[in-house]
Image 1 (cartoon, helix red, strand yellow):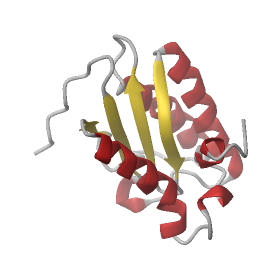
Image 2 (tube, helix red, strand yellow):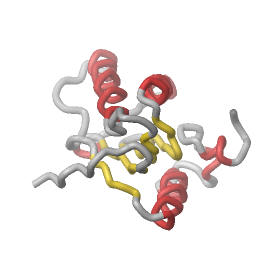
Image 3 (cartoon, one colour):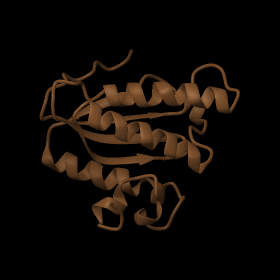
Length: 150
C-alpha cells in the first residue's frame, strides 16, 4: 500500500525521488539528462520552488525542494517526468511505464535531516561508482554548491 503524501505547504522542504521500472535506465546519453534538467529549470521557476539539491542518476533521481508558494512541490516531478516519459518513449521506441511507481516524497522537517539529504544526494554518483568525486558528476548541483559552476 502506498504511503500517504505529506501535506504540501509553503516553507516546507521535500525529498522527491523515483527510479526506473525494474531499475532500468532513465537516461542513456547526455542529451537525455539535459532534456530533464531543462524541464526542471522551467518548472522550478513556474511553480516558485527552490531546488536545494538534485541528482539525476542513470536509473533514478533525487530532488530536495523548498516549496515557496501555493504550488505543490510534487508538481515538479509530475511535470518534468510526464513530458520526459513522452520524449523517452518516442526516442527509444519504448512503451509501458518508465518508472517503478509514482514518485515518492518525504517531508524534511529537521535541519539534521536536511543536511544529511544534501550530503546523501550529492554523494550518490560516488557511491554508485560513476565518479570518484561529487564534483565530477555534472548531472547534480554539487558544482554550484562549491562555486564551480553558475
